[in-house]
Length: 331
Image (tube, rainbow, N blue to C red; front, side, top):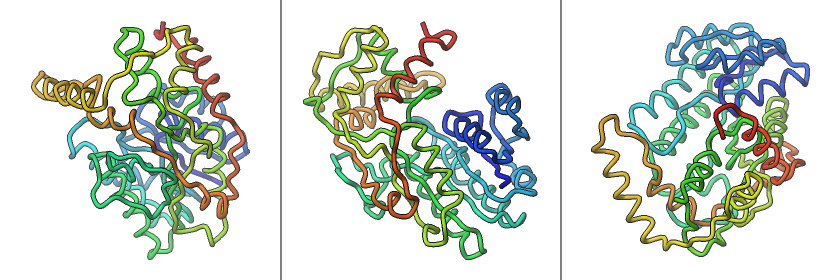
């Protein structure tokens, strides 16, 4: 099978492209940073640079391809709506259009469980349990991108969307690095009672789910799938495990959610007024995410993708910590 992986210079796209090469697939990659895909090219991937905001490039990337794993997108909780719309909606439109015009058989779309977040605790969320409105620009545009993907079915494209929660492992630059930085400055505090349960996903388990989605039979098509390790844990136990591995002090200070939320609102307001609008170290959304229960029901993925998470979170965390300790400039 010949596949295209978008977003291959990022964490999830890069790890999946490498895994696909190891499985013997013929892999073409696209990514924002050429240096981010050098290791894939050395392993035999074909790299075509360029911006997926260019519809012609997206079509050229899809030429001669059997399936696309679309991992590219704008991520985060801070920024302008138009930037998220461009990175998630327009780019996905271009990829979908490229798939249809070049007769690609299947598109596996990397979506996000951020769609479900409504600022309150939620447990065992099923794929159809959407909130009445989306909580931020990222969730809004990821939902619109999903709709573009599912709308392509009427043109004969086979589609699936995966919504993995808190993916970690070697290469994860989004979840723990900021927390480590805050704790080094003694600015991290447990928000709430510290017992909120959350899901994580080992990148190895996500790789297996993405591979399953590429080869899944017809009854799996046209659906979104929650992906996690299927073993919710107290968030702050996980954070403190990472702190121990990185030889940093445990997070032991507590802060009330109301106070943390107020401080985050002030932080955001200051950043909005600052030249260049830098990202706040603490956002209101971040406070909510760090203090609420958020777990997924993964039974649909178990049933239709035969998804069986094999790699434990602790193994994934050890892998992340080993990578982070050895990465240049992280000391």
